[in-house]
Image 1 (cartoon, rainbow, N blue to C red):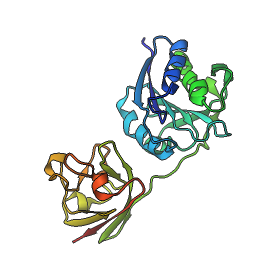
Image 2: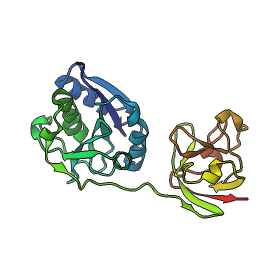
Image 3: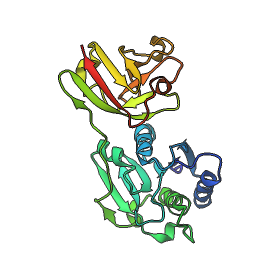
Image 4: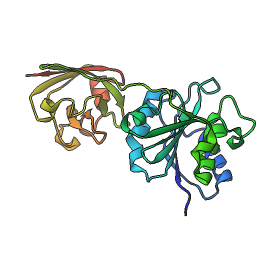
Length: 263
């Protein structure tokens, strides 16, 4: 049987040696490892952005996949390294809330505090646990398939809640969660939260300096430079425009509030 896939999600970027070091550690322990990059361009130190990234992608990987997520501003501190089993897959990450959305979506979750130093690269750097703790733990897990051997099981892992929209009969108040590479703005509003909006009710939406008055089903339905609302692949409403950046047009970004008013 071939080794399970190992994915990497980090804020390391691609101009330094960091990602190469992770892959080298994994390959030295498990030469037949299949290593895949989800992204190395999470905004530096953005734990919430990392949480959105892994939550949006892990369900499309085969059962048994091992996901290494390293967005770790607390590296070298008392924060714990975690090994988590959820949704038929494994996650190795710092215990800083980055797996919160995975915890929210899965009903059967088990987590272990990774303490078995025999799996680490020594000496362990205080500034590069991705290389010395997370990557080798993923490789050894792929070899053994025994998460119980990595440390004690825990239930008090860190988690945060996705901000919820405030919804009344006439208005919705919410927040922009992120702007993607194209400038599309992901909101914290889902169709099931606002069935009236999803059903096509007339609305007026404001965020930043932008005003949105139209729902579309594809990017091409929007006129160039016209911000519109659609349900994106993530299952949330997104503010988009045709071949342009809705973030640039509206001036909105992660954390910006929005309001929807119904006619």
